Amino acid sequence: MKVEIVTVGTELLSGHKRDAHTAYLGRHLHALGLDPSYATSVSDDADDIRTLLRTALSRSELVFVCGGLGPTLDDISREVSAEVAACPLAEDPALVSHLRQLFASLRRSMPANNLRQAQVPKGATVLQNPVGSAPGLIIFCEAEFAGRILILLPGPPKELHSMFEAEVLPWLHKKFSAPILYTRSIMTWGLAESAVDDLVKDLVVDGDTRTLAMLANGTHVELRLSSTDPAILTALETKVLSRMGDYAFSTEGKLLEEVVAELLISAGLSVAVAESCTGGRLASKLTAIAGSSKFFKEGLVTYSDESKTDLLEVPPYVIKRSGAVSKDTALAMAVGLARKSGCDFCLSVTGIAGPDGGSEEKPVGLVHFALAGPNGIAHQQFQFGLGDRAQIQARAAQAGLFMLYRALAGISIPEDGNDRGSLSKAS
Image (tube, rainbow, N blue to C red; front, side):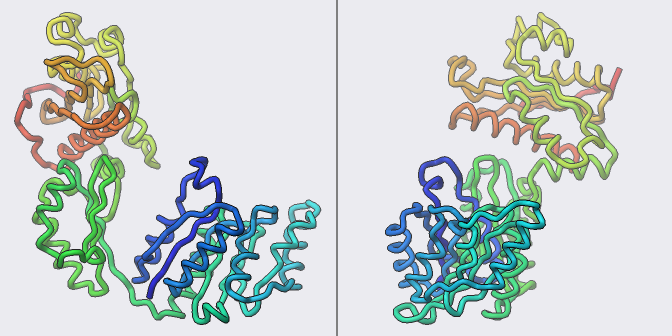
């Protein structure tokens, strides 16, 4: 079966809003074995919507239409869909009553244009909206596109999600007897997408992205494994993990900061961070986790040389001798933070995010990390040569988290350029 997703809204094409519906629906449909073949955004123009729906129905048996179900003049998905499906609209008394009751419960008078939302195409199934006024619709096409189905969903994400999960998912299971699709999401860091591909490409048939798909997002590479047979999935997962080794940090699709948080909480350990080039990204990632107060004590953005000296007690001669972006300064930042905070782990980062400030000796993208912990202090150096300022900062934050993850998981931190010594936890 061919499945297609259409998102409606001029704001999606003008760049004022991002299309989040395709990713949401794609994940749920993939789990049902109903992977979409096409996804398209279209403006609020009636002719454009009409043309796209005719194209979609000519090639796909099931088409989802997201947005354009509101009461205003530019909300025309309902009317155009009914026209293309050859299913005339008629007012549904039950929906009229529902809308009046909804507005009465809100102690608001209902504008007359809301009655447009009570128009239902002939033979359509109405989908209840528990958090909004726009009902969804399942339209069974007639005439030219007989046998094809349009599923109309509201545009606001909260409304679409609740309606899809409460109304559409059960209908899809019943209608298509969709088998259960078991999945794993193996998250990796430290290997480029091409390197990951080279390690696993022999495990699946060429082009079979439904069994093993690779998704790179800039800070990590995700391997998505899928099968209707749990035994096959487990065997494939074992093979993939053996290839990935220590580069894999989750088999459940968890972000690196989530994994780090779980390890810190389960061990009853605390962490503090001192950041220069990442400008607070490490602290932001860690404190975005619910319950972060259990493990995160403090974060300092010591951007200037003076702040490194004043707040972290980095000796001025270290910065003068080696520079702010150096192994020595990173180590001194972590040591100073450990002495002041008393945390179990203290992570520091200093580097050159660009686009200016680089040199032949220290190019843009050079970043030093240091981690002070119960077993001593470690240093790592990375050269993030590709990407703009924001990308370098994001990769640096991820690298710092991965360094902390290795320490928490009992995985050795690569010794190349590392110092391990007798640093006490606090003094």
